[in-house]
Length: 334
Image (cartoon, rainbow, N blue to C red; front, top):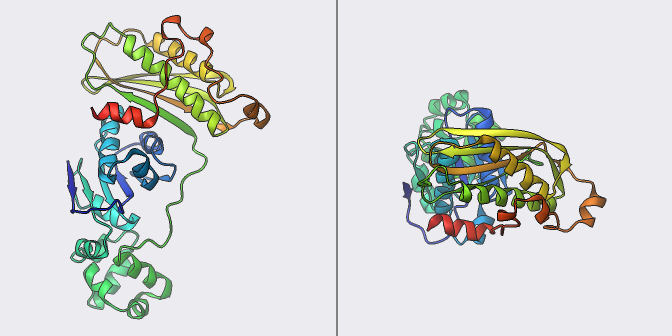
């Protein structure tokens, strides 16, 4: 459920995503999932991911909170985690919004300065991200208990209480400002793709749709690796079943590759090795691991999509079309 302040623009484009109680591997996978939508994403251990989704909002034609809901739905299906997401114009406000809503919900705050001030005014200063317990006590001794009181005070007064640099940082956060931009992690160690099924397969023995999805994911990952000049040394296939359980299989590739046909063939072999799942399938995910820079001479000599050789794929599913992001999202929302 989305809890949003009314707004007309798409200004609040920072997502602060909390997944409390998760492990490092799941946090990394979640960052990879968000990275499918925007390159400006960073994991913030132990339990958060922050991202700027301005480019994704423009590409998909969605409001930021709609994009957040899409990410939350995928994370629940793929990793069985319940996300709490704050949506705002800055990391500070987005992080506070994520702490101001029930688990599993999304809270959006308009980027209009008046809306930001209204949201922050009554919050205790201890709620400001990055503030120390000592700074909270010092401000309280000066009679400043709420974020609104700190924001209303002149900057020199806050600096006199806390010191020049710490005082400016607290004062800026009290106005909903961030002292530093979101710095994406680069390069990522893995690249993931997934496919959700709008309805669980009625017959778990009918694996045709799943087979096609696995092949498409392998081909798509290969194209994405080639377009960014990277290769992978391993793959992990995860199949999420109805009821919340999952099965997975990993494979080390014979050599680093970005060839779409080779990746699709390896993914299909893992899918076959998993055998019958015995339960309807909710989602399938494929992750390319051990990424490194490709040999530039080889990468330049082979165009994107050139590795989709039909000979390496089962004839029934040879060279399936790899849908673009917009096509896939429209299918998921239907």
